[in-house]
Image (cartoon, rainbow, N blue to C red; front, side):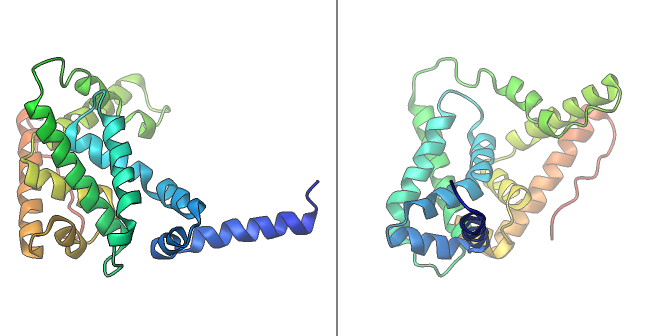
Length: 217
């Protein structure tokens, strides 16, 4: 039976863990605390999965790809020097794993590759659709979300990775440029091209101009 004082101590420990920075958790892991890596995975697993899915599409290999990312992180912690944010390095690892995955898939024999991507795109916004509006409104929201996914998927790779890192993570353009190994101005230029492409894509299919607000351009 855990008494009140013990429960309070446990709560304080969890709260302290939540407040620790990524770099502090990484240092704890290097000192042998496996739970610190569990905490890092909990913090960033959703963003890594979303980035990988939008980079390579849905499919039977997606879960393996994400697992590969975290294995690379586990094996590479000693090489991370801490001069950048952990997330800058994490998404550089994720991006490289996605590129390797895409190269392997191009070399694979033709098959059912890409099956289910449209279904996944259509269901990707299910979690953010308010069940309150009328059915037709919900359908319209879902279709628009699926169309936006298609627009992003149609971007050239260099533009897509910048778009996803900017819109789906908290990385700055400086950190994105470090992750991709390109100048900051190049990253911002790719983002502008990506936004223009997405706007054209939606305009051509909907017949109206939709604003896709950039973040910090």
